[in-house]
Length: 313
Image (cartoon, rainbow, N blue to C red):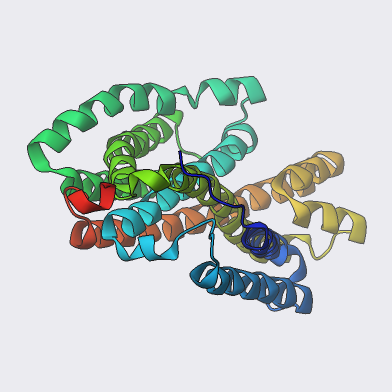
């Protein structure tokens, strides 16, 4: 077996860059997207990631061989997996709050009502192989990702008065697209990596999932929070500062304040908060659907049906 040295500088730069960038995105709704702290931390994260790329191109033993991204089977597959998990984790993040704070389910009831995602993936995953045999990996990945985008759009149509059945339709479509796209995408990524760097390929395969999930929660959650605060602002201007801050912080906080106020005033606040949250939820999923649809087009135009034979040697 081939032994390679560690790349502590590359690991440090990647950690600093990703943590700073995700932190800036998460805190942006609180401090402001153009606030000094947000811009400073976000810029620092981007600089650290740029230095990471610069170092990896020159390091004698890089933790990530950047030349692999020249291969569409590796680069586009990595992007596809990242965005699939971007959508999935972003959906889970908002869906748990939707089921509890809008639909009124308990945490356990909300979790049970998300089981259609797991059930659909169990059905869809075995079908992926048959689809690949008939249509090829490129088309299956592209159509699978487009299906994820469609499912995300269906979920974005959910409103305050929607029925749970509408939610099930969106979850099933999204989960089916994800289950169909994941297997051929992973296969393309891994088969594009030389055998002596299989560990690097496996690490990248895992990283795409973790990074996509973290960014999905950070980006979509921040978009939701920003729109929520903006739309709720007119309804809380008359409240005392402590109550106003609690309501602005989250939908759960606004509902507690509304219950404490009671009467028509409290009911009006809860209604305004729920509608403001739904507006943010819908906007965040529109953004997510657009990104995934764009990635589906890139996958269709750029992915091969198989990695080049010499890539796996």
